[in-house]
Every structure is written in structure tokens, then in C-alpha cells.
Length: 421
Image 1 (cartoon, helix red, strand yellow):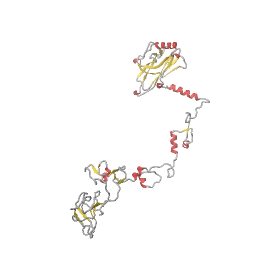
Image 2 (cartoon, one colour):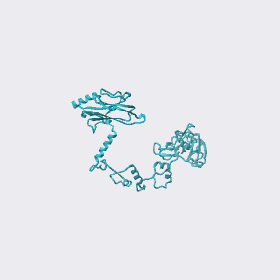
Image 3 (spheres, one colour):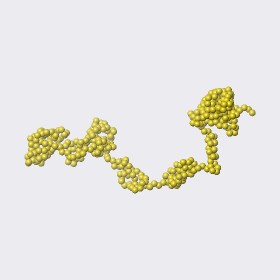
Image 4 (cartoon, helix red, strand yellow):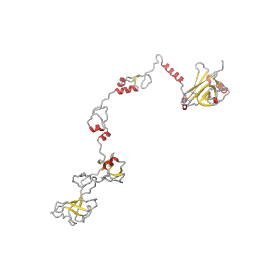
């Protein structure tokens, strides 16, 4: 019979270690499995080797076990994971904890690809060592790097199944505290919700939920509802749908440009203070489309002004009625001033002490509050018409013989705001 082409041999250093282990009862600790490419070619290992010809990768031993059919054989195993490779395996070696090469093997050429090559595979390698007393060898491994081979998993599963086979070894039923066997629930059983030992699959759960009937909500019964649209809210005829705050605001919005008096010191959402500030037309296009430049044209091109209603009373626009003639929309108007009893010593002012004349005279100033141009008299006797303002003093200034006053109603100061969107 010809000599085997591929084989494993214990090195001279390995024999020395193993013999010493038997003599001292101190086992050799095998720790690492190395792979090499033979420096590019296959070769026949020799007992005097202390290293591989060209080592390409080393890992911790994955497993070591006694062959069940031959107690003198030790099988040492290592796994090269898919992420490692890019070289050809031609040689392998087993090292102890001191880094001594205990055994070397001639390995059939096997290219180990890596994931970057477009394909990946795990490569499990085993080396069989023959020694008269296997107790001279022990294994030291790191459990965090051990990889289970398919054969190992199959053997473990078969053993686990066998341990439960036969009379008295039936697996238990699963519960909330014990792993075991379960029976799948039907759709009806899932809907009933009374079983504590049946299991529900995702498909079964969906079928049960689809088949469930949830009552509609009523004023006295909890249930499901559909949300109403803004149009349905506006119609106000549906008694089964629910209304969200957003839909309510959309159904009954205050129009852009609406002015409100707000009881807070800051404007509510979607509102601005009516403080005469200038805004960019591009940033508030909806508001600009409504009020335009009525209250100020800003820079004449890119800005416009808000109405300034701070400290002002609002008055309905006359709009050609004639009660407040010649008023422009959005224009400002001064207060009406009244004079009381005086001695009539000022120019062209009727003597209100004369009992034949009216005792109350009122007038409006034509333009801004500090102007004193023309006085428009309104009396019930012989002095109607307009009079020059010479000698007439503005309200709020001292004038002997003539008393002035402004009249306003009782009021509360709130924040005027305008809606911009």
C-alpha cells in the first residue's frame, strides 16, 4: 500500500512535550490552529518543523474531542469564517499555549475566498493526532470565538430529541413560565380570547381583528368614530362623525384681515398686533391682498403697514351713507371738542351767556389734533356757519373765559389684533 498523500504528523517538539506531560502528569494545553499556503506550493511536512512555511492566518481552536471509534485519536477542529480568506490552504499546524508547534499537516489545496470576492463560505478544518495516551493533551478555548459546525449542531439536536423520545419523555405544554409545545388557535378561538394555552400567529391575529365587530360610538356608548371633514363640519348634519379642532377652525375660519380685541397682551395664533408696523409683502401675501396700502405703503415697493389701533375707538365706515360724509376708508379722525360757559371775549365766538343763544357750541378741527384753523360752529340760534380760529385755544390749554373738554365713554383697554392667514 502506498503512503498517504495527505497526512498529519507530530513534530519532534510535540513528541517531547507529550512525553514530558505523561511523566509529570501536566497535560499539554493546545490553544491555536494555524493555516499556511506552503509559500505558494505544496510540500511534505517533516518532524523537525517548528513553524509553517508561510502562515497566512491563525485562530483559537474551536473544539477537540476523542474519536469515538479509536480512543488513541484526538480530533482538533478550527473554523475559518466567511469574512476571512483570499489565499489557498496547503498546510496547517496545531500550537500549544507556549507557541510550540505540536503537529503539522499536509492539507489538500483549498482556496478560501472572502466576501469581497463575491462569494463567502465557512471552512471547517480537522486535524487527527494519534498518541498512545490522550490524557496527555487538554484543550484551552475562548467560548466567545467558538463556532458550531453543522455536524455538531445536528448531533446536539438529535441528542436533545432522543432525550425526550419514548414513554415518559413527551415534551411539556408551553406556558407563560415553561417552554414547550403549543397548538395554534383558530380565528374563532382568537376572537373568543378565553384560551390560555393556544398560540396565535400574526396571520391568525389579523384574521381575528378583521372579523371583529366594534360598535360605533354614541353619546352614551363608547366605540369607534370616523373624523368629519371641514365640509361636513360646515354642513352640521352628521350625527356620527367626530370633529377635530383643526377641522373646526377650517370649517369656520375668521377671514384674513379680521380685527379682534384680544384679552391677552400677545396676539393669538394667526394674528398680529394692530400697531402700525411695516411688514414685507412677500411674507404676508394674504394679508397684503386684503388691506393693501390702506394704512401705509411702506417703502412703496416691498412693504406695507398695519393699521395702528392702539388707543383708538373704531367707527363704522360711512360708505356714502352721509352720516360721516367725505370719510375715506381707513382714515383717522380727531375727537370732537366742546366749549362750555365763557365770557365771549374771544374773536367771533357767540356769547353763551346770552340767554337768546344756545349754551353749547361744538366744533371739529380740520386736520391733525394740534391744528387750529377753521372752527365749524353748530348752534341752535343766530350763529351757524364757520368762523376763523383766531383767538381760539386748543382743548387742554388755558384760556380765560372759555372752557374746553373732550368727551369719551367709559372703556377698557384691550389688544387690537388682525388676522394675517
